[in-house]
Amino acid sequence: MSEHVKIEINTGVATITLDRPEKRNALRREIIQRFLECVEEVADNESVRMLVLKATGKVFCAGMDLGQMQERAESEHSSEDWQKDSQVYCNLLTALVQMQIPTVACLQGPALAGGVGLVLACDIVIASENTFFVLPEPMRGITAAMVTPLLLHRIGPGPATYMLLSNERVPASQSYGICHAVVAPDDLDSRLKALQDSIMSGSKSAFAITKSHISASIGCDLAAQLQDSMSVSAKARATADAREGLAAFLEKRQPSWQTS
Image 1 (cartoon, helix red, strand yellow):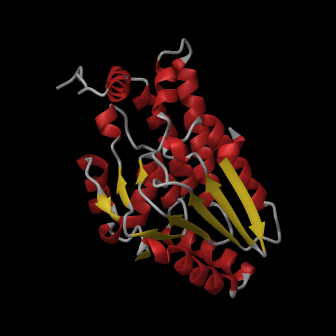
Image 2 (cartoon, rainbow, N blue to C red):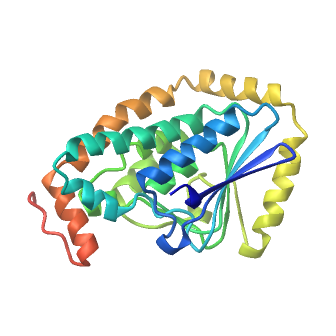
């Protein structure tokens, strides 16, 4: 699955690209693991001063691969599998949050579910006008547990609650500050280039100190919150409603919840 995550390092800028457009860049465990390895490679490279996350196709990331999630639900060792999947995703988000260089998510299209977590784990977000965000987990009988602390950190409890409970699409231009710049699709590359040039004019050590100071000033240990959220995510995936929600989505029917 490593072919679905590409990394390029050029003149101090690392670009990691999700490249599974035929599946809307949905995340399987193997893809997340490779993504994590790429982030760790960037973190260990002293020459890199900036990280950009991108994707190919019309969708930035549709979240977790629900086909694989259904396989997990039917597995004899489903609880162990859920825990492993949650841990790998948690490790990826934590690695992004703890990067000492500026990180930029460049969105050419929508981000859904776990894809929103990738976006929120970055420092700066730029997006094309056709981008939107949605957290449809409750419609699948599960929760956006690991997205939750990042969402609260970025936009506050009021907007976060709306996004977590409404199942509605939030356009990039009205995303409560998730996006720092929203441009026409044809202008996305030039906006990224301008931002890249500006960031690259700064001091790497100053950026590291600034990011550490921001975290200390906010008084928010996102890494610890993500770790705690991992258990919530795994627990939600193991419920009867989670199995029904995933099956209903894959079978293209309305779910029949056990609780009303």
